[in-house]
Image (cartoon, rainbow, N blue to C red; front, side, top):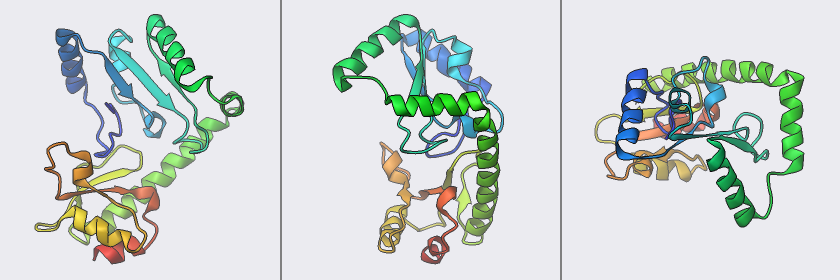
Amino acid sequence: TNSALHNPTGASLSPQTAYRVLSAATAHGLTIVEDDIFADFEPSLSPRLAILDGLNRVIRIGSFSKTLSASVRCGYIAATADWIERLVDLQVATSFGGPSPVATELIAGVLAGGTYRRHMDEVRRRLARARTEAVARLAALGIIPWTIPRGGFYLWCRLPEGLDSAAIARRCMEHRIVLAPGNVFSVSQSAAPFLRFNVAQMSDSRVFSVLE
């Protein structure tokens, strides 16, 4: 699960919901994998299951591929020692090695040099501007966000009555514009009125001309 900047909705967990999720996990003997690859896009930290739980029933996953570069395929896992030992064994058995030494040295250098924080401050500012502009332009077309995210890339938007997101996505593909129709994210196939937009890719005016 994504506790913050959820894909596709962009929503972040409330303390009340976090408590209910952890209570349910305890009652049913479940382990939660908290996919937190968007953490550094938040302007301030919202509740995290791993922090509230103390890594008792939660495994936390983070990554630098979204914040630095998609080519930096390196992340981290926070879990209890016995889980980490087994996960390392699994990685060796399935990939015959660990992460790229080049990637790990690059990340270590960026983090140690103090440039990462300044980089993320600028990324968050740029995404905030892009989000504000995208929300205004979509509203003019009657396309309304389900929620306004605290950060990140995604806007989960409801289309005007009678429009089907899959049909719009197919039309956009004809113009080499990729949008994610709602039912891609819906097991029950009940999200046809929704589209997921990536605000980082909406400076292209063709997106709005196709939607009009």
